[in-house]
Image (cartoon, rainbow, N blue to C red; front, side, top):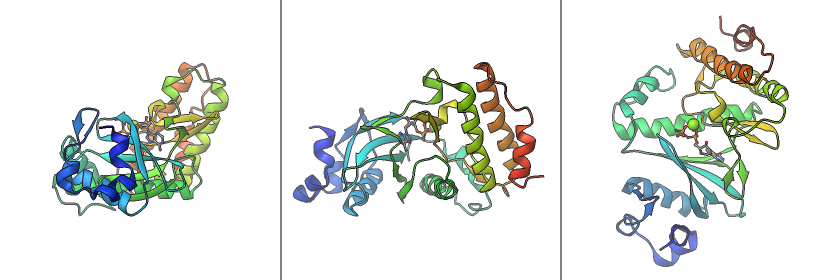
Length: 255
Ligand SMILES: Nc1ncnc2c1ncn2[C@@H]1O[C@H](COP(=O)(O)OP(=O)(O)OP(=O)(O)O)[C@@H](O)[C@H]1O
Ligand SMILES: [Mg+2]
């Protein structure tokens, strides 16, 4: 049975699939746990996702799926792993975040909070007009956002392509950093691996570890982000701004 046959909304309705049924289904030979399948099911039952078309990418912490909404538009569904994550490490990061210091040290709570944090961060970024996916919905470990790509194929990461005009791309990435800094949001894992290039525009993704400027690691994360970006573009022969960290610190109100 094909994945897309199982997960169309009509199929769910027709067959009244229950937890016991969906437990059997696989994605790339790895089982989703029951709770995740139930959350996917609930997301579909709410009409947020009409179909899940195929898995796009298996990361360390998540599996990203390509789906369609009710208008037949592509959407990205990021599913955080509950069973296979390093939740102790995630917990350490979370409790340092003033927004989430109360989170309990349970695997499930940590993963749920992690997903909610990415959703919140995406909302802040999107509102600040950062080129990033539009956050649509979050339910426990399932995060739905707009799709950056074409026909369910994600746009390439900066690390995957030969950038046509590295200088221009650098300037554009700096603009995105500036928008985030203005919004008092620090990405925290910014690099060529978390920036997609669509129509020669950079799109920033993967906001799960992003923090606000009042977070104790804010300065450190901002410096690391900027060093990553500068190092990458320097290698491509771009004359980088050596004072970028100092400038962005001021924009972000960090001193
Ligand atoms: N909104 C989106 N639209 C299109 N593709 C996406 C979207 N979000 C994520 N992807 C795809 O999924 C991949 C992994 O996403 P992301 O970096 O958010 O997850 P991750 O768990 O950090 O994965 P990794 O461990 O590989 O970094 C991206 O490189 C991209 O190919
Ligand atoms: Mg990533």
